[in-house]
Amino acid sequence: MEGSEQDTVELGQERPLVVSLCGTYLKPEMQSLYRQITGLKEFRNVVFAETVANQERFPFDPVVPMKKQERPRFRGNFLLRFWYKHVIKQWPPPRPVGYVGHEGEYYHPYDLVELLEQWKPQLVHVYYGHKAVKYHRMLEASGVPWLVSFHGVDVVKFMDDPEYVKGLQQVFQDAKVVLARSESLLERLRELGCPQEKLRLNRTPVPLHAIEFKERAAPADGKWRLLQACRLIPKKGLFTVLKALPKVIEIWPELKYVLCGSGPDEQRFRDEVKKAGLENNVEIQGWVSQEELKEEFGKAHFFLHPSELTETEDQEGVPNAMLEAMAAGLPVVATQHGGIPEAVTSGKDGLLVEEKDFEALSEMILKLTNDEGLLAEYSCQAKQTVTEKFGFEKQIATMESCYLETMKK
Image 1: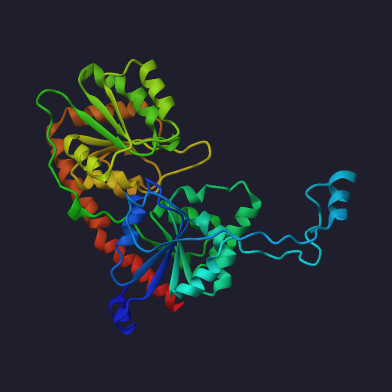
Image 2: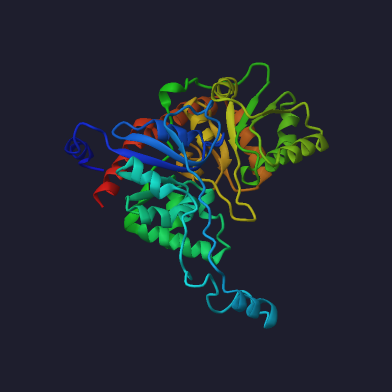
């Protein structure tokens, strides 16, 4: 945003304080959030969270745990509740039957308002839309301006709950700015009713200086390494990969599909690998550290990420691990899904196929393994794409511009 440098000077010598508000600080897969929280230049930062975890992996200070507050025990409208629930059996009732003299009142389940009064930040950044719905009334009671960022799962989660959808509309109404990780998420937020004038694109920041680039070449011994790094959940397309591998292995019998990550689908995936007889060609490493992942980037020849829309319509933004892989020089074979086409241009820095099309996925893998010139070309272009679109400094500056805009509003 133009003028942000001038705005920063006008704010004086001391950097403004922002609260990063999270449900959990931080889950293992939230590496990109950690980069944002720790990457601020023009703002000071404090984290408020319901749950504090993995601080050894994500060191930061201060992290302030929010305390749960006891629900007030008001005298209930027992007779009305009994009448509707057990006599005429009309539940939920057609009229409020809450607490005597307290219908419609809201209690603060956490001490967020008190903490904001104590710390006196200039603004609050709520990470994830469903958390903004949860904290909305407390944020409004505090009077502190706030913005919210959406990351992917939070444009589908709880959408079958009318009360939640109603709460999301209130978030859209009261948030000063609404951030999204990708153009596809911005479009989804428009569909859900977020005003266009509040929407801002803030892509995942990739620390290019911390990732070593290597131009890729075909292995002389035919031992290809195809890497995927992700949570083991349905939208990652893991089982589509298993269907695609047999055709590839016919040509490259010593090829390895290396999977880094853990999650609820892990045991099912292991069972399917065994059932398909692919134990010699699939290497499941479980969750790996950031340094270990960088080592895998160095050993791999290209990156797989065939994401797909789930039955619950869960979709990707732009996968963080895929961006890091591209920065390391790994071409990508992925799908036309979510925000992936915003990072990967098929025929330029990778190859994209339709979701769940395992035959097309096999063909694109073989296309790269059979054309060493194409592999090298896509490798160099992958790094260039990430540099231009997802550079760390640029995306942190964009986020801080949105902070300044929030403060002014």
